[in-house]
Image (cartoon, rainbow, N blue to C red; front, side, top):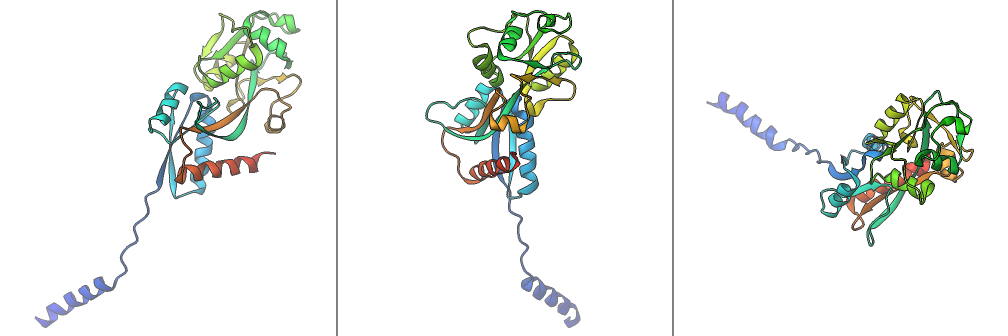
Length: 254
């Protein structure tokens, strides 16, 4: 009996003396919403944050603007990232500036446009590129869907009192915008600078080509402020993420 009990006794002693395993902390969840127009930009921010932080993870959701505002108001998400101004009384903090690039088909010979040209091209007053010294091609405007932040911005900054041409094609996302412009020789559209692909060509606006430097210093005229919005100022890991993001963006700005 002694020979059989001793190993059992030793086992009990070892178990009693062993250090209890340390539980791995569950990362905090930050629930973030953005709109299709800024999906690519915010996704990149989420990836960069995940590569440097282990204490939290981000659940990114993509909604139309009205649904995003409703989601943060009802607590479905903690904060939204958008280019629209906040409802009265809401918390808002700036994150970055985003240039709005005007793009044409790669074979289009036009290299620069001013505000008046842009308005006339998008509202239908100019219907052939030959009127601006280009090829004898019909102009085909491509525009975002209604309530898209870049659409509202473009109307306010460029079209002012005039509306879009009734012949304009609708693009539901920046990817669709680039695709439609790349497919039409006479097409012209606009999208966030961070979403531009090599399938289209960016033109100068008022003589300035958009890039990180010209957007930041204001020389490029079409730029939007990207904001984080919530009904109340976020706390905890959401606040830490916003602070990290502002610091990261400022360090990457020329």
